[in-house]
Length: 175
Image (cartoon, rainbow, N blue to C red):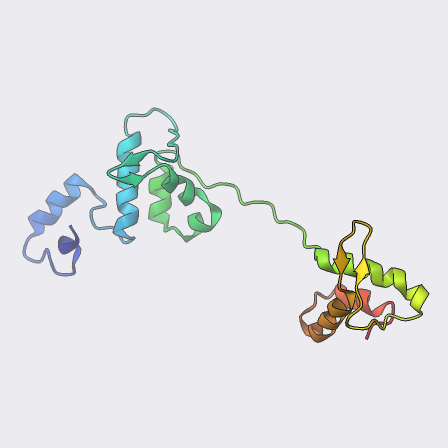
């Protein structure tokens, strides 16, 4: 088949192309032959099913795992990358895209929250937020936060910080 898909391979033989289209209208798809092989195997597998068929991972056809393949095609990232023709073919046996995962609200990193809390609590006691680089805080859960290193990292990465972190850092006097 790959030889017949080459440009000019059917020149002078229009009957070959007609015969190939009778066997499978997608004999020469615009997408990869590997994708078409998986789809053809899936189509063959669910041809006699009524309604939406569920193909579980591990079900193989012609040595291909046609259980994992449809699940992978349904993921939002892969589904968006498919052509319209590929999506139409997948929808015929009832394969539809999964709903995209809800976006998680962005929140401060755990390190930021855990390290910032001690610096705020030590501010009144020490009178400033000048913390030596080697300073470490022991949290209630017995976790140690190297606060001095964290503050130095915030200063050197100032340009990359989220806009909500800059005022939080400046409020107690951190430059």
